Every structure is written in C-alpha cells, then in structure tokens.
Amino acid sequence: MSRATYLVRQAFTSLRRNALVVAAAILAVFVSLTLAFGALVVNELFQVNTTRWQEGVHVVVFMKDDVSQAAQLDLQKEIQQWDEVQETSYCDKTCAWLEFNEMFADQPALLEETDASILPASIRIKLVDVDYYRDITFRLLDNSAVRKTVTAGERFDQLSNISSILNALGLGLAVLLGVASVVLIANTIRMAIYARRDEVGVMKLVGASNWFIRIPFLLEGMLQGFVGAVLAVAAVWAGHSFLAGLEPEDFFIRLSVGADFLVQWGVLILLFGAAAGVVGSAFGLRRFLKV
Amino acid sequence: MILLEDVTKVYEGGVVALRDVSLDVQKGEFVFMVGPSGSGKSTLIRLMLREEHTTRGKIWVAGKDITKMPGWKVPNLRRSIGTVFQDFKLLPNRTVSENVAFALEVLGRPKSVINRQVAQVLELVGLATKGDRYPLQLSGGEQQRVSVARAFVNRPPILLADEPTGNLDPATSVGIMRILDRINRTGTTVLMATHDHAIVDAMRRRVVQLERGRVVRDQTRGRYESFRVDEDDLAEEEAPVAEPTPPPVVEVRTPAELPESESSA
Image (cartoon, rainbow over all chains, first blue to last red):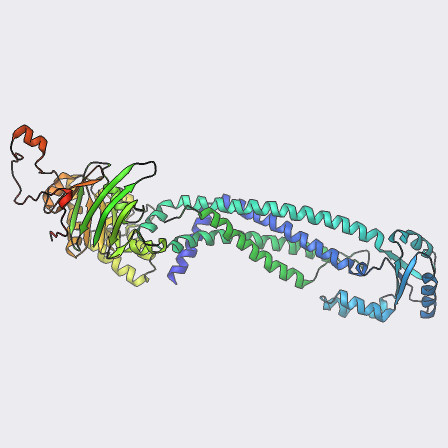
C-alpha cells in the first residue's frame, strides 16, 4: 500500500518539476486527439446525414399535407413515366414516421416530442443518371402538390467531397501530431530521469527492482497522455454540444451524432491517450535504465 | 562468501582492468584491497555489484554465480551487498533518516519496520540525534556515517566500501573504521578498497594488493606496504627488508600460491 502511494507520489512530484515541458507534451496530445476525434465525429455526422442517399435514392419529393393520398399516388405514377426516371417508391406518413424513428433511435427525447403527423409523405426517385436531377427538380418546382424537393446530387456530392477532404486533413494532422506528442512525452521522461539520476543511482545500488524504478516514469507518461486525451474529449464534446444546439434550417439535417457514438469513441480516445503516454515513456526509458 | 576465479575484465577500447584475478573471501572476513589508482580495485567492486560484466572468469557471491545471473535477479544480489563510496552518494533533498529509510522503502518494507530499523542503525553509527538534519548540514565524517547506515540498514551479509575514508581527515577516518569494524563483528563480510596507509597498518587485517590488474599480494594481518623480498632490494642490500618495527607475522605469497581459504577472524 505504502509502496503504491510512493510510486504515485514520485510520478506527481516529477510532473511538477518539469511543468513547462509537461504542458507542451499534454498540449500536443490534446491537439492531436482533438483533431482525430473531431474528424471521427464529422465523419459520423456525414454518415448519419447521407444514409438515405446511399440506397441509390437520388431525389426525394416531399408532399404537402393537404394533398390527398390518391393525388400523391397519381403524381408518383406520372413521375414514373418520365424517361429520366428509373424507379420510384412512395413513403406515406407512417413510413416517414418509421424512418424518422430509425434515424433518431438514439434520441428518445426528440422522438417523444415529435408529432408523427407533421412528418410529410414523400416520393423517392431513382434516376437513370444522377445528372438529370436538375431537370426533375425544375419540372416539379411549380407542382402544387409538392412541398419541397431534395436532391442527392447537390448535397451528397458536396458533402462527400468536403467530408473526405476534412477527414484526410484532420487525420493526417492527427497522425503527425500524435507522433510529435509521443516524442515530446519521451523527452519529458528523459528530463525526469535526468533530474532524478542520483536517486535512480541510489535505488539501483540498494537493489530496487527494475520495475520499481520504471513504474513512476511510466505512470508519469501515462498521466500526460491521459490528461491530454481528457482535454481532447472535453473539447470535442463541447463542440458537439454547441453544434447540436443549433437549429438547422433544414429539418432533415442532423448536427448531432448519437450519445453512444460519443461515449464509445470518447473512452477509446482516453485509452489511446494513456497508451500513447506509456509508449512515449517507454521510448524515454529505453537504454537509460539498464541494470 | 565471495569467490573470484580467474577473473579478467577488459573494457571497451581494450583497456585491461583485471587479469586472471582469483580471490576467496570467507564469511565474516575483513579484507583491505590496496594498490595505486587504476590497479583495478574499483573494477573489482563494480563486477561484484554486477554493474559490469566479467570478460572471462567466474564470480560467486553468497553461493551464486553472478556472471550467469539474469538481469532481473541483479537487484536481489544488490540487496545482499551494502555499499559505501568515497563521495557518500546521499540525496541532498532528504533528511538523514529519509536517506537511510530510502534503502528500505524501495524494497517495500512496511513503515513500522522501516522506522525501527532506521532508528537502530542511526544509533549504531552515532547519529541518533541528527535524523532530521539534511546531509549538507553535516560534516563529511557524519555524511559518511549516514552512508554506512544506509548500506547496513538492510543487514546485508556483505559490505563493500570503495575508499570510504578518501575524503575524510585521519581522525574522522578512525571513527568510520570503528563503525565498519563493529559491523564486521556482527558477522558481516567487509571488503574495503583504500589508499589509507594509517588505517590498514593500524587494523592489521587481511590485505590484498592489486597492481595493474593482478593480485600481487594476499596477506593475512598485513600492512599497507608490502614486505616482500624484492629482487631489487636483494640486489641493493643483499638482505631482506630493513624494517624499523617488523610485524609479528609476515606471510608472503605470490599470486601462484594463493591460499584456498584463509580467515583472519
């Protein structure tokens, strides 16, 4: 017991001594993991918002509520006959409610508050070629039964482009900074060893086991990585809460990912930060503490 | 307790520190290692602590062949050897008690045991009232006594001392030697490298003399200077050494006829 407290105390004392370098290492871990986690969240947001398009649906036509279902089905038949259209399907209010339930399965509060009757029925259109989406939208613009037309073309392409660029940039930077943070942690551990070299010398002399000498240093590195990761998770969480609080203009754009996603990845990021810290200190310890 | 068999140590770069050194130290013996700087005394100590590896030959400490010992067992070896150095190696930011306790803390001894043993050993070295001082508030002799206390607090069967009086004046040195002698009387084997003529001559214990990495003399109840009959001496004087007060027992040996075992206790 006293042994464990001794080891932990050593780690903390050493962290305090090298406050500046430790701060730099923590900052590097923080920025790197924030980028990585942020990229993951953006990617997930993209996934959440594009599931509908991924089944090959190119245009969704939302219907006005005051139009009868018969008229809506007539419109579907009409659209089906257009040359550019390959396939259509009709999704009534019940279908819309089911889909909505699926999309927001992780947000029971939202589901509870939402009235099923406000969700519009829609016609989903699969085109022969995606490029026709402008013609279709144009043709439906003046139709009195149509509330709104949403196309995959514009948004899907844009989103997928932006998202993949952001992801690549974010992850690339995260990897670079990740390497930098491991190196920085290794450096702080070396400084810590240097600062305590007399003590380490005496420890070896009186027969302290190798692990007894190493553990405070490993603990120190792990703490640095972990603190950086905690900051990163907090930052991403705060950013996400801010986004989720915004009222998107388009009802069907979601600016939040599920809580499950955040928790699962948050825990992973924390573990990853701690692991990076251990790896960093292991590098720092290498060849310094041979018997 | 300590047995060296044809030990040779060549450092990187080809410096030969020890050549075919054989030495047998029995339990409870007090042995002085003498010889000029660079004769291999410190290397011998470093080898016994496994801070260095032998190039050739074998070393047994407390019945274990330490030349074959895996690295993870080395800490255990060092727990059975107390060490005292010329430069004390005390931690300046810890008090006397804490410095001594440190040796037990890193072995994970319970607090109550630590407190009791530290108090006992500080009593033994005559620093019972100075446990709360910091090393730099003490004289050199007192600091060395702290270092001896730390080496002995764990009651190791062996004590290695590398010029423990090297930084101390003669009177203070005598105090340190009294303590080492007392420790030896508890059955602890003491091996001490030294340049201190007065101490060796006063104590009259076994003397092992090293020169350029070889044992050139191994004498029970020896003195610092050798009383060997050198060929040079014969040529000059045609007589054994002229000595104002010859010692009562003078055993002269060449390395070729080293004793299997010899105890001066």
